[in-house]
Length: 382
Image (cartoon, rainbow, N blue to C red):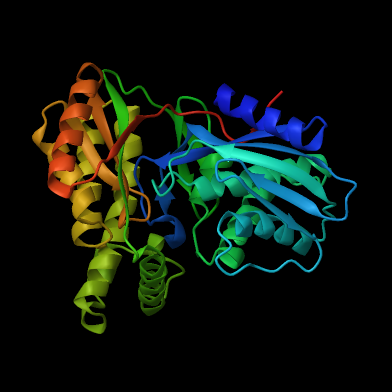
């Protein structure tokens, strides 16, 4: 949790609305392994991180609600009746979506004032949208005593993303942001939406996120396309989702699908297995195996699922060349964003400098490097 960020939001709210507020902190998330498995009812290994969204919120006597995005210096006023998604609404649609989805559950949301700010790098695949949705779902639930459980709140957040932002995301992002546990990653079963926490000791290594600072235009349409392919293959296999498929079963319909669709389905089956292997490696305290699985995951995302890009491949290839990095892969939806790597603690600064310099030389732009800690999920800040 970021105290400076929380103070800033609290102060801004007080100066604008001249009253105290409820403060909610909702973290972003990383995903150690298990990419694009969530909408296939599969397994993933996310964790909440110590970067996120701080929200100050209180009831309002006015006949409009106000949301202020501090980082963007933008204020949006709206009426909580007859809410519709805005064209090119950006962050506004996440807020509107949460209010609308709460109303769909028959919950009464009165007018409110709110100020929020975040320190999650945009487009880095750390789910700033899920953190924003969760902060409002949690805040409004507390404020208007709606009586929703955390499970119900994440479904509200997910539907806001589907219906107001137009991204048919799985449940992983919202789940990890809401249910995160300090120093732990969550082995998440995306079918039952239940998880098992695994306390991870990375020993002499720590997590490095490298943001390529690129977002290729393909991302949204390509994401929805991958989802369609997975659903089509599941239908041919007469199963509910690819989580239930084996490579042998997939090979049985090889003549009925294109080579490209076969590769995509194969990636999902393999990645699901890798998540299980990852949990076994944690139990055995086998840090080398964890790293190797990260590399395997990237290879699948790059060659089978085809959601990587030159910048991400470049960063993973540089990691592979360095003996002090034991694993690396692209993280998130793809076509830009971040890589996640396990780097020797005492070589962290050196690798950061080295990879930044090489990236700059190759692409004539800078990448950004962060270290993150695994943290607690969405909560009210006392």
